[in-house]
Image (tube, rainbow, N blue to C red; front, side, top):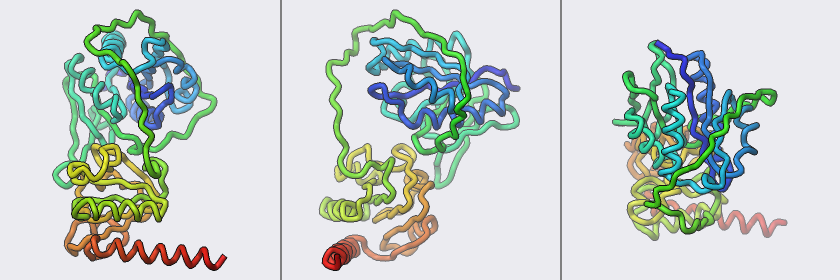
Length: 334
């Protein structure tokens, strides 16, 4: 039975910039809350974050608990956990959603442990069943499984950017802002001494219209470098599966899939990967999908629009050469 307590979203921001996953979660929270006939509330912590309230209301928020303080400007796991747990115990949300970001993946289990409740990570869908319980879907065992938390509250889940669409903003929506005031207690066990921002190389996966993703089938670092060159020639984003990260060919933040990024390019080209569910769920939003694999029985061919049966280590160099020749011909014709 529905208890009519609110659905919460914990806003995620970096350097006072609201991450795209937050309004996406608010849009989905609005859908869940409408089924439950309750409200959507957002916890917004940081310094100078008041500029985001209008967007959050337009996305479907009814109330914002805003901690707008210099002490909250830099993410601090202990402080953020204390603030969120205190608010949750006071207002008793029935659902709490967080982004599967670097901060969210740390913060969510800390909050869940303090509230003595369950947490489902990397969800790919959220819905309300007939018993008004949150159904949380994750990829597993080559398909999907549904997880529920029928006894404990709040029901908690993390979701990656791109799983849910950006909400259609209701420009005339407004809501209530509740100030969250300090003092915010720092234990001193963890201190932020310096924040160093690393500039990503290549085309960002979040905005790339064409994405190449490489897997274990590329063979070695030389094979990976060929794929990287192909991505450069095609002006495409370069992603990967878990084996490429484990081998040290690619960085963790370029991994696509359940525990990585969710992307929606116009064109996706999977090279030397088998089509495991944990990866393919991350490219479900692609418009056209192509795969290159030497095994004609590979599961990846059941999930793409076009398949090329060939050893990518031989195919990619030929493709590279042909593209370069085509581009040179185009330039010479001008």
